[in-house]
Amino acid sequence: MAALKVTTWHLEMAAPAQLLPPSRAVRGLEVREEMPGDRALVRRFYLAVGENYRWVDRRSWSAEQWSAWAAGTALTILVATLDGREAGFAVLDVQPGGEVEMAYFGLLEEFIGRGIGSAFLFETTRRAWALGARRVRLHTCSLDHPSALPGYRARGFKVYEVTEEERTDDDAVRARWSSSASGAARRGAECAAASTKGGARCGSTGTRSLTA
View (cartoon, rainbow, N blue to C red):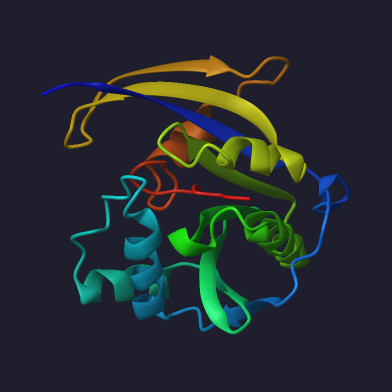
């Protein structure tokens, strides 16, 4: 099978003051919090948003698997609506030690390019800090929308590590290289754990698909 080289950027925000607001507000945009155990909603968004970005690891999950995952982690589920219509979703996962991972973030295709992503990301990150986070982190990769990485950086997230891997057409990992972002300290044990944790890998699970 042909191999696909995938680059993943690991980003962090270390203090609430680093969060930068978008340049403009989006009229009609609202963000609501859903019940933590609403596995049907998360699955629906996962399938709809991830269809174009190779979100495959949970595509075959049963209802029981989705329920077990939703009930077994400290999740905050957010849904963005525009004029009452669902536009996107985000999932915040509170980690041991007070870190908050933005495990999922994405927009439905018809809402891409309308400024919603920037405003929704700002509000999602603000709520992550409101959960008492000592650090907020996420991942995005080269399979994502081209606006993803610059969009995260525009809100104040900084890259602390870059990883590369080869995947076959069935998304099996063949090899992996790792390189630190310029000027960033290596966080080897932490990043290894993040790379193997469910909900933390781009192209299979993780944060991706930010669109302006």
